[in-house]
Image (cartoon, rainbow, N blue to C red; front, top):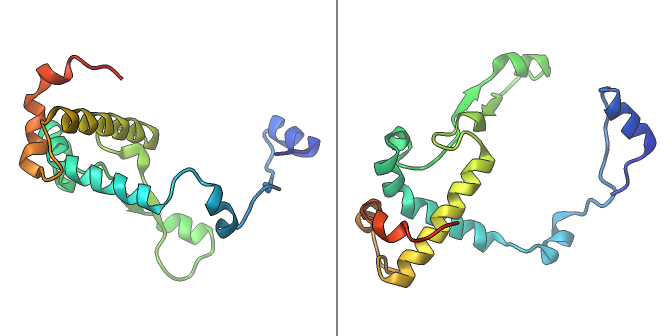
Length: 151
């Protein structure tokens, strides 16, 4: 990525600027080179759902969302007006208010812990491919087992 001197000077001067990535490709062209695909996203979504009973048990503040770590949405009509939008609604996804995590990056870290936890639980027989919500929630009682591992 090449950023020209004019853009760098604007950034250094805290001035408004616009930079367009010259390496930007349409998704269909970039997709074959991606290291993850839609199946990976579905796998992650399903894992978060499987762990929702455990998260709800350990972190009651997630109860409203059934144990899912979700960002609240807030309508921002002032911004809609500022942007000159006459119709529709404009919503702010408040990732800063994620329960437990407080940021998308932290939620990603929590996901990594859940992935590692599930791998260990499957390898040891604490979970099986057919385990349901009760078995996932019961992992909270297996602290002795998990205390032998580090991430």
